[in-house]
Image (tube, rainbow, N blue to C red; front, side):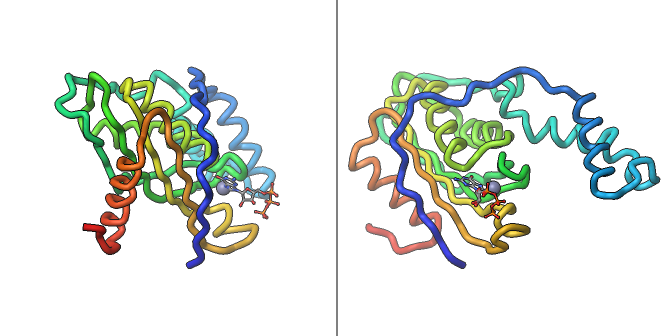
Length: 210
Ligand SMILES: Nc1nc2c(ncn2[C@@H]2O[C@H](COP(=O)(O)OP(=O)(O)OP(=O)(O)O)[C@@H](O)[C@H]2O)c(=O)[nH]1
Ligand SMILES: [Zn+2]
């Protein structure tokens, strides 16, 4: 498998802003039209629930990350450390905005807490929520980093995402590769970066520095 790695983009401390609307009726009409465009009879037995219920429900779920009402409650408590907290191996499934096909892989998240820290499972919930939108891998990586920094009022956040894009596997270039994107927000020093890299290497089963 080929592998491409993108240099971290200059960090922008802004995230994609959530909206609050999902139009089920438009989703139904759109799904019906797409079936017709593909030469299928939308009223046939196998397809009548597809456009009228299943696709709208699926789209609503897979775009939850654009709606703040679906955001997980990030309950915080008083910080017990000022050291780096690293969570590796968070499963990630998202939807590419170019072809509306999935991309999936793994996210690694590190933060240096301020006054507050958060339950570890919330990091997984937050990545899952942010991933549920039509986006690019670069934007998603930034949104997770900027969003977590805001939610946790953290001194710094680092995020790395490695994913495979079905729009490249199933069509177009028809090749399976991995893309890696990174973002940093706030204060993440050289020692933190080394620790983050070491945790990711250990997660991947690579040789340890220690
Ligand atoms: N930067 C970025 N590109 C992506 C992402 N997901 C898919 N792409 C790329 O989006 C591009 C879409 O290219 P276009 O030229 O607009 O469309 P296309 O003719 O379908 O391109 P091909 O996929 O090369 O056939 C492709 O190069 C994909 O590899 C992503 O998350 N980030
Ligand atoms: Zn894509």
